[in-house]
Image (cartoon, rainbow, N blue to C red; front, side):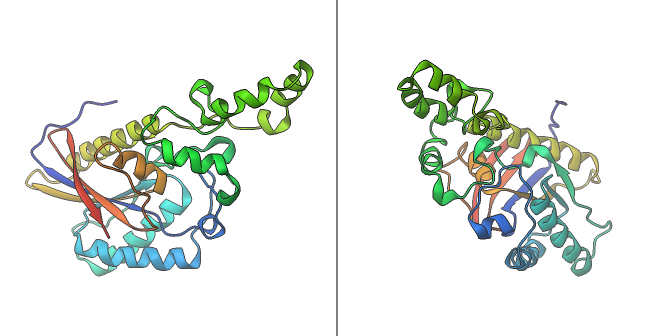
Length: 252
């Protein structure tokens, strides 16, 4: 990763969750799966754009996932029409702002996953924990909970259970809070450096709208305060100066 700028420029990051997706409306876990905005989500994104006008946004950066990019483009389209800019805002995207990869839980109904609820109450304190079928299986909550069940099986049954299609088809890319938090912070520092490089040197303050995801934002929030799961298009403020990120509070 490139070195960070030590400019005195103050960058305000308005970090917001994307509008409601179709998976959100159905109560399904998404992670890295794609799901477009629902009609309500489009309306929410339009309302976010109205708030972003008040924030005098200079740049927009989103997760590379479609629901975040869709929200970002709705905001950019509105701002480009409503606000006089020397240069049109063109949203950028990066995978470092993506949602936590949820491994085998992706696409599953939240209501049917008791272990997900257990994970969500522990993961911001025990930040090494991962959803099931992670490469770091020793840190996986599912791995911890399944040891007793697996050991109760006979050897042949254990072998069949371990090699079952449900286990072997999992993507084994799930992420811990530590992993998500680090890549989110790296993304913001990279964005800070790039926005400084592409903005006239006389600017002392920059405002950046960042569109990300509920769990990913909670992971980042846990670095500064007790995390909460933001509702769709709700957000939080972080400021960046001289290589340091500081907590600025929740924003409606």
